[in-house]
Structures are given as structure tokens and as C-alpha cells.
Length: 108
Image 1 (cartoon, one colour):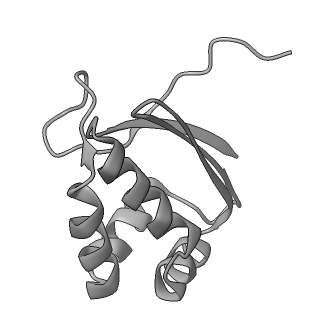
Image 2: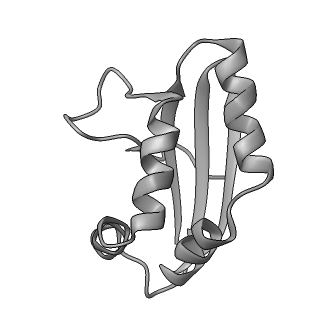
């Protein structure tokens, strides 16, 4: 299954550069938590301060299971808290929501 999500970064070129550096050398324990959840491929794209994520998953993936596993993993919690220093919620995000699931409106 493919999911597409969006999030904004704080609109500060220095912070955006730091954020990108963290993702160029992703911590192994964070990559492991992503793969263990059933995510088989993940890509991030950026324009300005807007991020776009594409996730490919296998049949074992669920957002609920990923959220529960992340909440129980101190390494992921440390990472998420660190990343939140660079991120900001989209205007339409629900309280506490970071990445917002996008609706597909066209497929060729």
C-alpha cells in the first residue's frame, strides 16, 4: 500500500539544513523501527518548508500499530522530540497530529 503525507518545517533556512542533515545520516535504530513496522520504502521530498512523504508498506503495516510501537520505544520518542524542534503542524492538522495523510485525487 502507498501512503502520502505532508508536514511543514519551521521556515528557517538554518533549521531546514539541520533537519536535512539528520535525514542524510538517519540513526540505525530509527531506520530499524520504520522497517519493523511494515514500511518497505519511505521517501521525503521538500519544497520551501513543505515536506511530502511517500510510504510503501506491506500487509502487516497499520498506523495504529506503528503509533503504539513508537510510543513504547524510547529511541523513537527521543527522535520525535528532536524532530519536533524543526517541524510545525499543518494548519488543518488535528491537535497533536504531525504528519497529515493526503488524499489521492488522480491516478494515471
